[in-house]
Structure formats: structure tokens, C-alpha cells
Length: 461
Figure (cartoon, rainbow, N blue to C red):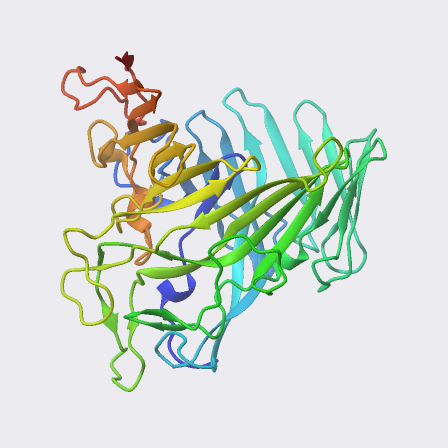
């Protein structure tokens, strides 16, 4: 405990997680053109075109879980009522100084709880509904899912207070869940037994316990030091790689290896702060280096496959980080500074594919620019290059939302940048997919949801 913690240190936005679509940040809505004409105000939007408004938490919520939730309407008219609140305890944040980031052994801890808003109802544009019924005495326990056509899924839970599922049934079929000892090593196995007697097995404890940001990390405005990291595949013997595996009913098994990998951002505004105390180690308000868990290897074994299995390895390129403008510590950007970073994936047959991503802060962080298949270190058998439309471009630009976050890649993640042109070159021929540019009053033929309305396909020679 102790010290001062700023919101940007422990809060990184509010996100709508839709299965199959991933996380979508809820952004401030400054234009109402996409809002449904249903009499409601929608102060929040997502980059994917959904809109959201506030509603009360469900009536069954306990006193500790009262507040407001969201009603989210997607582009296709599906309404998600997310107003069942559940609190999950999270690991405490740690740092060494009252106002700075970690520099020596951590002494200041911030206990944390994370709030989740789960669905109570989903309704499509035709009025069909799916209701989610929760346990009034155990908010984390979903009891059943029932649809307006009469179908139902029922959940039961272990009696150990862990809120872990014991079984799932649709009335005629049952799926049974078993778990390895809590806190066990990576060899601990969880299983799901299917109605036909076969099962899925999961050995993921090692990944669950992976620490993304070790306490030995020294963070300052010049960079990051004292970090144990890997830049390629490792069999785990060194202790710097964490592995987890999943085995399916057929006997096929996939093993993933993850490691701490250092990534960089370029052309980021330099802002080195000391919280008003020169005796405290200076830290960047928004760092140009960051650590992340990254896949460094994948192996598939099982019936019909070679004895050694099929293996993919992932090697990450230079961080290519630099500060823009005036700086006093670290690496300065120049006219020749790289604006991308890459990863090379080696397939089981030894062939390689290089993926190149933008890393300019608030411009193109994370956007895939180039895929080079059959990469040999200097050239490729096939190259695919992507060009993106500029943000804030008519007719979709005015509908961008604004992130409440103050650090990180908040600008690029809130701006709509659809693909404008894709060129694939192979064996001397180029195949082009591009959005037409002859629509009256518009730079390119997109609609207000950034969907192309006219596409041209061509090839040369």
C-alpha cells in the first residue's frame, strides 16, 4: 500500500468483448448518425460500429454488485444487455517508489478488483431472445441460458466455492468438467468429457502463472533493463519459456510456447516525469518499450503425423523504438528511423513467412503492412502489401469515437482505417484489389461504416 496511483497506471479502458470479434473499446460518441432511431441516447460507440447506452444492473445483483451496466446495439441490430456485475480479484500492482514505476524491489502495492458486466439478455432484430439466468447468492455462477424457442442449457458447479463448472447439460446430453489441483505446475490437467465419452484435455497452468512484467525490470526514460526475455523458440529447459497444451478427442495435441518479448514504438512523444521529486527515478509517462507475452513456438503431434510432430517457430525482429522531438534520455528518431517491426514464422517444412507491422505511435501501431511468403532473408516467393485509408476521411471519419485512455495505442485503436488497396505479387505478376476512387464527393468509395461500395480487381502484366 501507499503512494499515489494515477488512473492510467491501473486502468486501460472499458471493452466490449464479443465472441468471434475480440475486444472492442467503448469510445466517447461525438456523432449521432449511427445511433438507432429508438428514442435512446447512446453516448458510447465502438470502432466496429456498435453503440452503447447505460442501464441499471439486474435486479438479482447483490449489494456489492449494484450500479450500471451497458446495452450495446451492433451494426446488424443485435442488442446485448450487459448488466450483471461480477467482481474478480486481480494481482496487486507493485512498484518501488511512491510516485514512480519499478526501479528496485517493489514496496508499494495496489490491491485491485476488476469489474465484469455479463449478459442477461441478447435479442436479434426479429425479436428472438436468449436470456441468461444468474445465481442470486453467487453472482459469478451462470445457472442457465434459455432461448425464446424453448431450448435451454443448464450449468452446475463444484461445491468447493471456486465457482468452477462441474457439468453442462442441454436436457439430453451432458458435458462433464474435471480440474487438476489449484496452483499446480504446468503438468496439471483439466478435462471436458463430451457426451460421446471422448474428451478434451487442457494443460495450461504454466501459462496462467506466467508473469508478464517481472519485478526485476528497471523502467526509465532511456529504456528497460534487467529483463529475462527470449526472441526465439525454446524447449522450456532454461525456465524463460512457458508451455501449455491442448489435446483433442482424436488424440491430436497442440503445444504452445510463450515467452516475454520486448516490443517497441517509434515516433512517440517524449515525456519523462519524476512526480515532482528529483530523487525518484525518472520514468516515461508513455513508454516506447513494453514487455508482452508472445508465442515463440507451436507443435502439433498425434495420429498420422511424424513422430517429432509439426513445429512452427516465431522470431521477433528489432524493437525499432525511438522518441520523437526533443529528448534527454534514450533513442531519438531521425529521418532514417524504422517505422515498422516484424516477426518471422518458420513452418514445419522449413519455409518462412515474414510479417511486417507498423509501430508509429498513434499512427499505425499494430497494422499489418506486408506478408512475405517464402522469405529467404532478402526476398520472397509471394508478397502481399496492404494500404490503408487515412483516418478521419469522409464518409466514415466523422463517426470515430474517442478513447478515455491517456497512454498506450489509444489513438490508433479508436480510429477507423479500412483497407484501401491490397497488392499480391508472385512470379512477376501483380494482383490488385482496391477500393474505387470515383465516387462523387468522396476520396474513396466507402459507406459511413467504412465498408467499400465499389471495388476494382485487376492484374499486371
